[in-house]
Length: 314
Image 1 (spheres, rainbow, N blue to C red):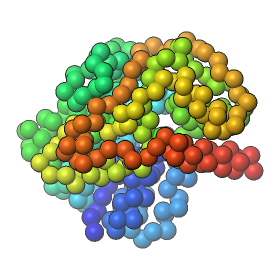
Image 2 (image 1 turned 120 degrees about the vertical axis):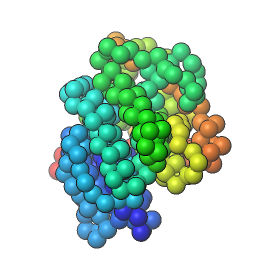
Image 3 (image 1 turned 90 degrees about the vertical axis):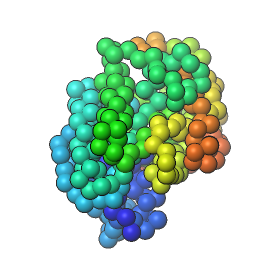
């Protein structure tokens, strides 16, 4: 049984990771400041004797014995990370510093949940791990983009300077149950608007592309990366099937039998026009690629939000 810390463990992806690693027989320590995480995401786990919840902000140091650390702590959607951009940057940079120091103290392996946003609005398509990115250092998204880039820098420098045992994954658009209703992401926005039969908001003309990876596939990739040997990354984890946002909106309307119409609004500043991972490295090093078809993942996600909205009305 490993003692595993999951920071951001009450969040969308963190809660799925807690659940999976508990089922595999580990002792899980969920650390979250509940800025965007939700107790509802993990309350079904709290009676498990191998599950602990600690309310803590990783911008402050913490000392706990552990074997592995998954660092998923940081607001990940523009609405949330722009709400307090200074804290977002601190969560990435001070947070990873504290986790790196903890990993050194415990001789633990540390996995950093980085992001496709390190590529910015990419000039290379699809994006390979060797691409350095096209990022605005002074924009409204910079607190997140540059924070995550800085966190990767610290990970690599600790590895080179102290031989810290590290892993870096770059997460592309991921969806599934427990997404935050108000996080402003394409999937949750469109599904909730469709279920409410209100206009579906598409930014720009809808020709910008996204690729959607179901959460279970992403968690599989993260765990495979953690247990891999002689490979530190970074490695892209995401679904390489690319789709225009306008086409995705039409699929959601069809899947929900919605009466919603599609309306268009101005594209937000620095919003990436293209987003598609090259996952050849993940295939080669981790024997990983997404298994879920979009229709299967959407079915589960739509069912989750249907129940969520019903319970909200009760």
